[in-house]
Image (cartoon, rainbow, N blue to C red; front, side, top):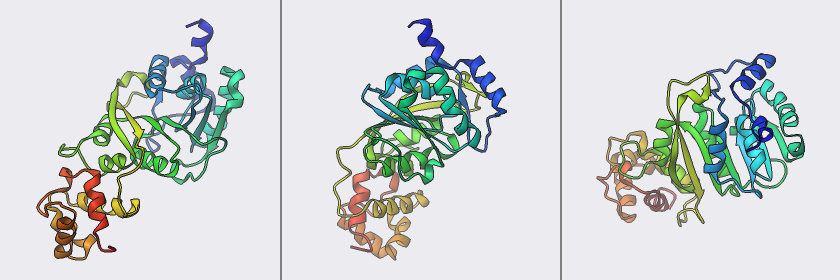
Length: 288
């Protein structure tokens, strides 16, 4: 790598200088922890498998550490930032550091959870250091709203990474695991140390890779209907499905009938079911 290449990315001194100039202090309210290590952002881009023809969407770009590395590797990058100051500053950072790529960058000043469309070509990849307090809702919203996203790599709190990638039967398998599995094949893709962030968080971080399924589980139920069963099953995860789904089905007896019709034991618990099982139950639910 030439010194010119390495100078493009933001190091610890660059991050602090930029933050000081903007009067920015990372806030817990928005789950902000800025990556200050160039090797880490290069590793994220490499692990994400970003290709020269990719249109990447990044949520929560902050000061632009990962943005710059993505812009070097992808065809286009669209960054979604909710913070007024950070959103205003990022285009200038891109122009200063990667002037020849500035026309391949777009900034959307918005709450990712309210995002309904993106400018330019449809995104093919989502790569982000997600704000920890909204990581799962943002991830699921983006996967649901933008079906052209084929590959995702997100950095999240380590425990959240474990939950997203957990298989059925695992102690941490739950709502995020099942809903993520509806969209994609999910796996843990590495760990990230605390010292690459400013400020250093008091939790470890993990990378999660999601490769979009060719199609969701085959079912006549809608995604919303399947997710309603998932939510009900884990709302009282210690209960058997016969009891946990009573409210959803209208009665414990109706829940048992739907479960038996789907080939699921009424005495099973949600943590033992695959996403396909939840889809089968939803098909035979109250609206069936």
